[in-house]
Image (cartoon, rainbow, N blue to C red):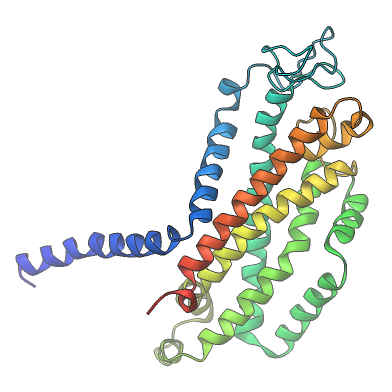
Length: 303
């Protein structure tokens, strides 16, 4: 290969990558809701990363002279506590900001655990079929036969109430969706010519599964992971509200709701703001997931 032709090949690689990114963004940006969700999610990440610099107070610092103080725009409110305080004088805004760290942490850990385990079991089921497929899928069917939140509650009750155990339970509950999705994608790819060619030239099973087949199955898994991220946050908030997730005084949004139950009529802000934080974050992630589906699913692309 001449020097000129080699340089053309090198120059072509980044341009091809840029073309893929450009095509992805063109489809993604057509969904305005997805773009709004993306920017809101980036803002949440920024707030979570720099929480210690953004929050005006410590999440567990108590101001005993400002119990259940309303937001600054109501009578009796103060700009020192823009969103008011809770029953023990903790700043609501600061706790919401630090709560973003827990929500993102929960989403990342749950999705990572369920995605990795789901991919492994789904690959085994779709690749080997037969008894391996039957055994794995029957276990997944049993897990899916239980209501997800009820099964998560049972698992946390067995493991013990804590944030870590709640994340493990939610990951187990979400895993069957990844297994079924991976299995279906692998079974589709196994019928294609490139897999047959790889078998003919003697590629080993592990390399065939993880290097040859898996990359072609990732698009639906990425979309599922984005949508499961919001489900993980919701389930963790539900477990926290029931006292089976993060324990007080952790500033997790579901736990904040649980602590504020008895003050719903007296102090609306201690319940409303954590609920709004959960609502907006989950909505943003779902909108972003819809955009990812539109951009990654070839069936939804224009010809």
